[in-house]
Length: 457
Image (cartoon, rainbow, N blue to C red; front, side, top):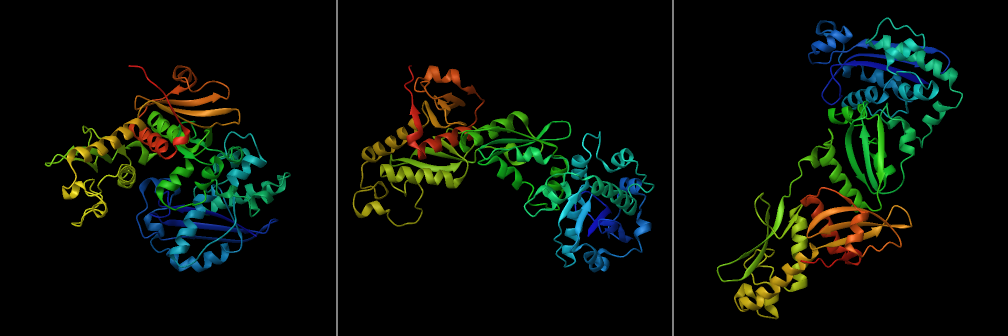
């Protein structure tokens, strides 16, 4: 059985808005066998613009039932049937959210008549409900009222059942098919065409403008994950409605995808990339000399005009780096502010230490300077050589004089160990501290992939 649903609401997302009208048409695949419609009191004022659109005002719903009063009846009509709607994720998100609040867990297979319309009747100028109906010769005398739109959707769906020679409806209902979770305007073929490879993907709106940029270790898997959780909040619902197209760039490694994402967000400033737009460093590794003459290292908050030895994205990243330097260069954890209690550091058990003023400043500072030189060497001129997009190429990321230069791909056989030659093969990109920190941290943890260069002068 098919439950063909249309609702009118007080707003665009279920978590903050109510339902004002519900219509459900039960169809057995051949004919309509039951209908249900009712106004609903949303327990909130209906915005003026929605009153103008639907004709439903506060007075009309004043004595209508609350959703909780009819939840059991609605659940009985929907549960066990196939939920059909035009832009199904909108109607389904409202019904599931409000049923859940009333104590019912709705889990239905879904069909979207927008997506099915594009497949069964391809090439039409528009698949919005009003224009789609006019193109198919269906008259709707109660547009933007629940039963008027539900019955128009029923007539469209009957035409789809009659003309579905390729079996699109059956395919969409298969358990492995996730098509019903995709945004209504996004062709499944674009998702299916994504490779199982690292890269950067772009979501475009109806006008082709890029509204979101993301990175992925596996492009197909990551893009699909955006649509597995149909949350009822405003941000998610608006996001889904505005996705019409996906494009992508394949990268050789996840690190290249991270860098390209950061570059593209700064270049394009996409609407839905909120967190990454305003990225700033939060911590840095600093050097100072205490009153006794010992050189000390410390992780502290980054400020715009400070000059840290190293910048990092989090306190954890900073302390991981500092602990590696402590271990590798035998530094005192107390003088590095890693050990903060009043007890002597573990070095005291076997040797003199600066924290007990039993080691000379010259001897201790020499090791600190070696650690700093080691850190600076990691930010010298070097490249990261790694897998390419194909077996006959390598990827390269170049840091020149401690700054991000660019990246790209070099065919195997071309000498990537000559800096001047390598730079002709790479694409320069604007850098920032975030990118530099990522590359430096990767080089520190993967020294076998690091190619160092001698730079004159």
